[in-house]
Amino acid sequence: MKIKPALTRRRRRRRRHRRTELAEHIPVVRTAIAGCRFIGRVAVGNKRGLLLPNSCSDQEMLHIRNSLPDGVVVQRIEERLSALGNCIATNDHVALVHTDIDRETEDIVADVLGVECFRQTIAGNALVGSYCVFTNQGGMVHPRTSVEDQEELSSLLQVPLVAGTVNRGSDVLGAGLVVNDWSAFCGFDSTATEISVVESIFKLDSMAGVTSGAMSESLRASLIDDGKMW
Image 1 (cartoon, helix red, strand yellow):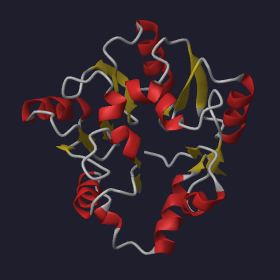
Image 2: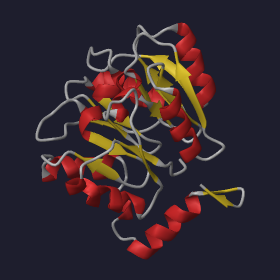
Image 3: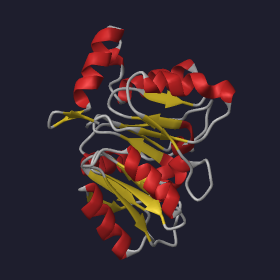
Image 4: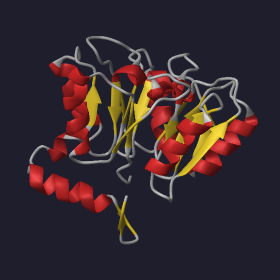
């Protein structure tokens, strides 16, 4: 999974240090979508593309497109379930989508993101993007997901899964956790146990012994595509 630029909402100055921490490793793009700051809930993407709701303005879309590598396709979707980040969960190979999402939208997800789509629920919840988070290394699902459902989902995604929470017991994983194949950011209220589970299932603990310089070089190498840095 290539390291993708991170889209972040426009934040107040007191939280600038978090952007700085990200910017040391990957490009950080400050933006809004439809004038809103909760961009992770209305956009979804992977290394191949980024899907935006139809409410995203031309100016916002142009800014995002100009900030991303040329190889990343940016496309707006005419979809009544416009909170795409809540309705779609994806990595670089497979996507889980809301059971009521339009067939045309499902086709666009498969085409732009280059993934195989499956209509699924997580512990009876259709908002798959809210109640599960997964990468190319592993994934976390709603704590009430049965063992049988976990096994089925793991078979579809071809990655190990675990049921868990963030933010001291919150089951809305999509609102409290953002993770790629290298690092994760979770809500400030997340406990040590929750963080430990995140590090384990997403195989982030394997990076613990890597020095900061080595990690930066590894991340930088991942941003190079055809001799050009993203």
